[in-house]
Amino acid sequence: MPGTPLIMTHIFKNALVRKPSKSIINALSSRNIKPEYELILKEHNDYVKGLKNSGILIHNLESLKNFPDSVFIEDPALIYKSNCIILKPYHPSRIGESKIIKNEIVNYFQNIFIIENGNIEGGDILNINNHFIIGLSKRTNELGAKNLSILLKLLGASVKICKTSNDILHFKSECSYIDEETLLVSQRMSKIDYLRKNFQLIKLPEGEELAANALRVNNKILIADGFFKIEEILSSKYDLIKININEISKIDAGLSCMSLRW
Image 1 (cartoon, helix red, strand yellow):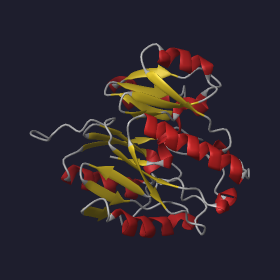
Image 2 (cartoon, rainbow, N blue to C red; image 1 turned 180 degrees about the vertical axis):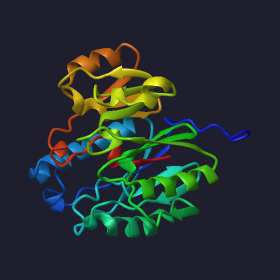
Image 3 (tube, rainbow, N blue to C red; image 1 turned 30 degrees about the horizontal axis):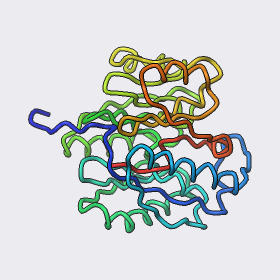
Image 4 (cartoon, one colour; image 1 turned 90 degrees about the vertical axis):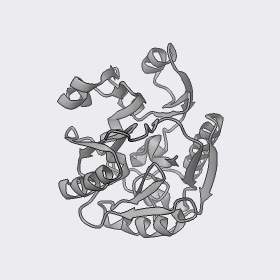
């Protein structure tokens, strides 16, 4: 949109995080694995340290014992400019998270919008400056994507709706923003025509798909530890912070889903 100020995706001053509750052992898992709480707590603490080391101020929200997945704070909300958009998660056990974060977020944002119809989760929304890619997936349907698209366009953004590759939980599970022209993608996601035609793609080596959900914060990139091939590729150009997510990945977590940044 002409005259719309450019929003730099990776420039952040603040982040909201939520401490995992002990109930996280009952969180949703595509592999039906129960993680260990103490190990997840350590990984989460290291993640928060990584954000701080990226030059970001951390705002902590209370853990929610009745919502095992609530540490994944990016799924029920989206931040764009000075606005917070309350999303609508797919799984019934997560719907209450949207209502809670709506009340918590008023302390940080004046403008709050709500997606009432359809299902849409933050894990399926990739923001690149004033542009958004929304991935249709098992957790985000066409109605939810279209309703968010209408709202984002009213707020001055452009939007493209894509189909997430089959057998991938969220669009961002295997696709991450690196810079305005570059995305980090798995081999499967690299086959999406829109991504292939519009961005430079760094393709993850086979077997390193878990590293696809990286997180650019200011001049740092948080990346899952232990994936040496992609680490070598990225470290030649970017300053990396490695975070162990072995335990929390048992419940389908990545690095972007554990914070809301602005």
